Image (cartoon, rainbow, N blue to C red; front, side):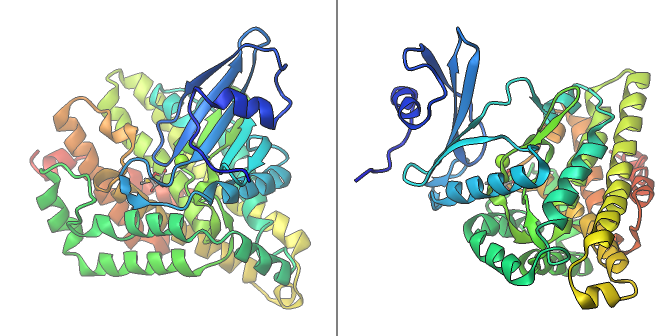
Length: 410
Ligand code: SR1
Ligand code: MG
């Protein structure tokens, strides 16, 4: 009877050679632990002579960034392999290829994207990718529309809802994105100067809390499509002509707006942080122009592609007879995506898990201002979500708190 054991650099080479026929049996392989994420062990196994490598990802039985006090079921990696397989098929390879999925070791052996870099890091270095909005909207439409009731046979879709139930990882999002940042919870990672600010602008704003609660219920109760569930800029690999989306461990049947909202939020946070990390005006301006057109295009291209593809193949008689169903469905996605983006921005500033874009700003005074601006912008997106219809509506909000330092006398 085969048993689970934790992989490490001493035992993993034998494990890999036993499971896949990828490397020559005599090859001299090296192992490097490269995981710095919040949840898993990740290793790169390489044959330096033949320049071949693979990645092994193994689930830990607890939340890595919190410790054993937050236990997690290790079977979550099995779900992730299932999602990657589905997304690979739907997108013709926009996610890493799986070589082996191990239901005993709860590990996945997959393609190493060694000639790609993480998008977040590239954006932090002011790199621009003008094809990104086109590609990521293809990924969104293929993975979301084609797993939804708009196109799928309804019983088959319900089987998928069952197959991709992911209660533990959903609970992390429900707590860390939609609950704990909105009161003084112990899990929050908040600098003391933000405590009175949060009290004034967030924690005591009952109307805002009501909107956030509604977004949480929407997240929990809308089995619209097989969503990625954590589509931030650290979940996307990129090079000069291609992207790959990784890490769908938070995937489940949820609201389409969540993927779109998280992505937009992370691009906005990069936008907000540019001022704090660079001085040269033309360099900054150029990057901000690229980011704002990317954000705008993602919304507009998503709407256009989702509608066009759905219109041709919608699968349900009443859906076909309805006069405006698709337009209304897409409009709701865009409004809710704005709200989801607002929650992601607030939680990445004061919640348990932050983003490098904001935290790496060295000048403390500028960091304080950027964080406050980010929180207020997040709030605007939530409160004005019903007015967000097209990409430009989000861009119009980006300039709102330009003079925050003057307003708040920082
Ligand atoms: C405790 S896990 C923290 C965050 O990391 C993941 O990437 C998700 O965004 C999660 O909320
Ligand atoms: Mg991740």
